[in-house]
Image (tube, rainbow, N blue to C red; front, top):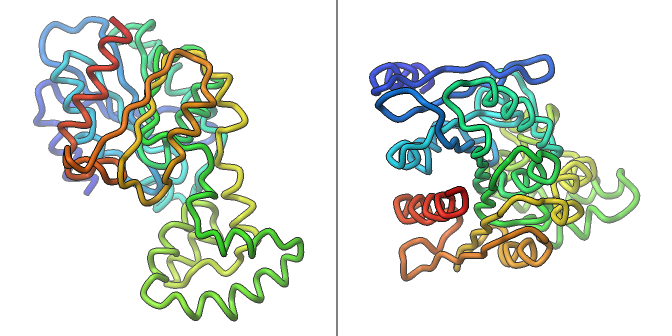
Length: 300
């Protein structure tokens, strides 16, 4: 997949710039896409995918549309995503400002980037991470939470959350392994896939074809992925998206919007528009138009 994407990037006009952005002791794989025409400083959109997804999904969900609007677009894979997860076993981290900070540093050194118009979109799970990053990265001019969310742990079944609240790790995991996991059936691969991003032991479980065995530790890891405690620190204009038939994180977009103290807008995409499901997978053009229209008005 990466080889095909790299070859395709070489054929675009202008070609995609392949970047390696230094992040702690590794390099983030990133791609800077620029519009055709005379090189100059332009507004730039950083696009971050969710869960374990590869960055190139975002070519269709925002990057190509941004280029058509004469913006630059930077797509990247952070810890817990794509090659960093699958090739280097680097899991997600909740303090996403430590990921975005070196990305902004890199962009500010580029003669192609307008330093006053750098925006960030976080897609799916990264709706939480984008808000967390914006709370501690004042150089961002705008942020989009797509969809808005405040607590990743609330996306997990209530009965599992109640079980994990028990203070005895051995009791929690014994019940989990003996009473819950045997009942999962065909849902086991989905659970393994959702859990593998949170740590090497959960990635190891997933690669072995089994669900995570340590619910107690998994729960305490996932609980760190939240932004309700820092959302009030965001100062840049923020767009919060919600989806009418959101199944993964229902109702969290309204909660996030209420917590924000910055200039903000809340938009719900609907089933009637063909865009009511999580992240509007069947309506990328509508979603891209909405986001970029807001960004252009906000950063005009």
